[in-house]
Length: 106
Image 1 (cartoon, rainbow, N blue to C red):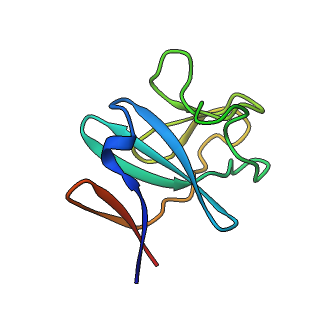
Image 2: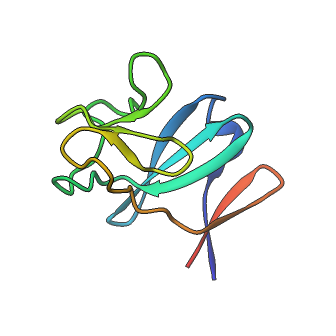
């Protein structure tokens, strides 16, 4: 079973956007023409990464950043490289892209 999440074109290159399906929150990252999908939940406190809608990237636009404690995550793997959850990972979500659409694989 697959669930439509968003269009690839909804995500600016080098940025991330958040999407909710029911109670589950997701982050879709588009970087170097590749897509990554994670659950929008910091491994430290299990809270959403952003405090303002769709503000996931650090000021330099290089890493995903948790707005609560400043933890930094690699946008392709979700690995925390700085902060209280160092070495932990955002939960990666299986997906497929078909044409311009991102589908979650349930």
